[in-house]
Length: 405
Image (cartoon, rainbow, N blue to C red; front, side, top):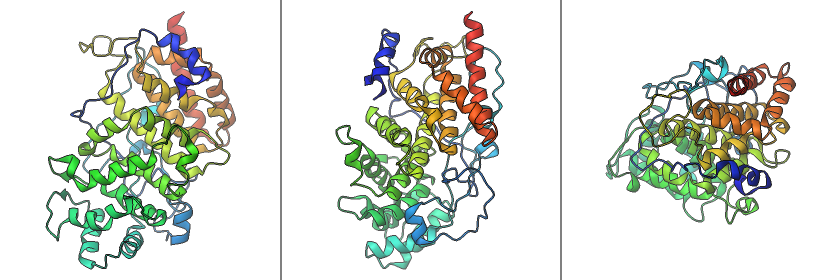
């Protein structure tokens, strides 16, 4: 945990006396913008033109679930029902941040090209040779049909319970779990028609998935034997998508504790030379979506100086936000993956826009602006979008320095 690290010990005195904002209550609501089916942000390579009709083989999928999936920035993307409006930047002064402003929605993985293959895999490995259930689940995913709480045999919930849930329970094989998770990441984007969230099969699947991701006793090595790289990356992808489903937000509010944040930061930012890039990219996407959600439910400390809500006083930065911000920026200039650097900067920038001067002050005090400057310079020719985003964040920091003088 960042606050327990040597650098965190330096930060602790600056946070003493600050109000530690709690996580959202279970009745907090929210929604998610996202990406269309043709724009899946969880690709393992930088943005490039890719034919969406590319065939994904089973072997390639198990190695890297996003090997043939295109990557586009979510600048002009909306959900099918446009459930969430864009996040508006909160700053006390007008700051030009074009890249941050155009990337202001949830990162959603919605590519459906491998649905049929995954259905065949999960059916064969859970011994459910039932074409009716397979057809129900396929239609539910491809047509984004609402998932009812109906327990009839011919219902989408029954199909999920019979075909997906067994793959997340104790003793499930990791290979089948990765295919089931590829389907679950799409299922969580569907509307859930029930008032009893905890007992719904989708929530059960999400709970089991989240529990598999948590670190045991703070030792990252213990998780390696629990999930294959493909399953772990798909698990983070699924948890990221869950932020777009209002019915799943109460569980996410309870689940995103320090342990969950530490697990995501560990997968996203540590051992970057050896850790699989698809795991890192998906974990960073989860952290970004969590930041988007948190900035909706925690009042701004930035531009809105006339707000009447005093639940979070100006000058306060919750501990879990400190952990995310510092964890994402620490050694960011050493990150060799373009997509990870871009998302790490996106999440950090959203925090600085929302929480205002206190976040900028922390970044400057810890010297992270130097690392951001290096990212800007090193990416200016090879990855201009990363360089422009770094420049946005430096503009925020420079504005704070000017106002502080």
